Amino acid sequence: MTKAEIITEISNKTGIEKVDVQEAVEAFFKVVKTSMVAGENVYVRGFGSFVVKKRAKKTARNISKNTAIIIPEHFVPSFKPAKVFVEKVKTGNKKKAEA
Image (cartoon, rainbow, N blue to C red):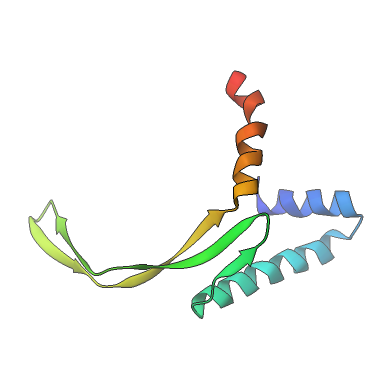
């Protein structure tokens, strides 16, 4: 499902104009991005958490040149789904698994 399909689905279910739904969805993503860039985690109860994870400094290998590369400490965005969300997906995907 794409962002455009999500916007259409929300518009159909709520009766709100697509333009207004699009602005709300874009604003949500902007708030999440801005918060995570600032190092803050975003928690959406019943859905999941958008968290910033710290990756430690490590040594990697460039196999083609046979050299060692130092990858500095850095941060990456991550999503951890809520237990309720995981359970719904586990029980709801039985139709696709059988097909």
